[in-house]
Image (cartoon, rainbow, N blue to C red):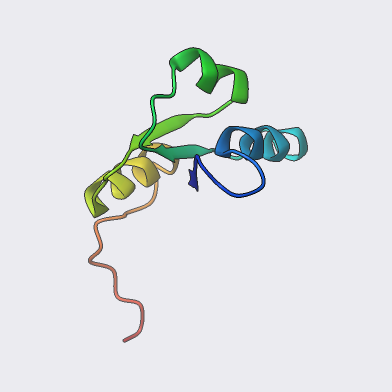
Length: 79
């Protein structure tokens, strides 16, 4: 999950660089700007999340990318 607006490159540009190395890595773009479906496809972005977002939105994305995992927030991390 990456922000769209960053200092040196956009989230779309970052996605392209990542996909060049590992095309199988799922990529989600977080943005408050209007990013079109055509732009997302050209950057190979898999999923877009609109700001402001909530914990449930992140859980939905993770569940989409990793359906065999649980992201309910109720796991015991040894605490």
